[in-house]
Amino acid sequence: MAINICVQNMSPWGFKHPLSRAFHNLIVIYLLCESHSGYDLPFQSHRVLPPIFGGSPRHELHRRRGDICYHQFFKWIDGLRGCGPPE
Image 1 (cartoon, rainbow, N blue to C red):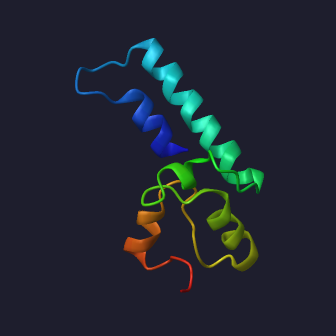
Image 2 (tube, one colour; image 1 turned 120 degrees about the vertical axis):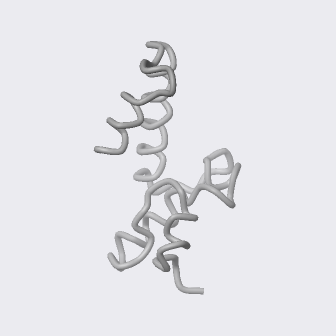
């Protein structure tokens, strides 16, 4: 949550346009709903951009085991930390 607040309030120009702030909120809400839905549909983010997004399949692994796949959106962060899913 703190990272989201920082992203909302920081900008190279000192402010963020209200439209870009609203767009950012919509994207974050969509990704949160998608990662917690448990669905594996063909148009979800982990299917559209698989090298970047982990989606609900990875978040389900986190719910089952608890010690892997911490990040809800960007799976490369888990890869850097060594917390990815077992091969």
